[in-house]
Image (cartoon, rainbow, N blue to C red; front, side, top):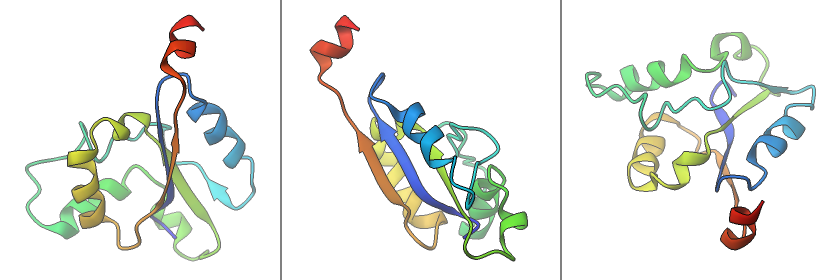
Length: 116
């Protein structure tokens, strides 16, 4: 699929980068153009009026055109801050992606995180 199959969300120092790197070692997983796309939060373009325009804008962060002929390939995103901005991200996600990606949420004990 040319759109993300998975989204990795989570707290700081909870292992989101490590999980992202592990998943991207699979030969059928294609990295997006950048690790944290932020296409659903602060890179969201409010000037775009239609769902199709917004979808095209979000897919610019992925190698969507290259992936179209290969339906077995998957891509994903690791933007941990989506977890904090869920009230905006979830409606946008449902609008622009036809198939809702699986969300992988990583958390960590805040006391242990502060100490580390």
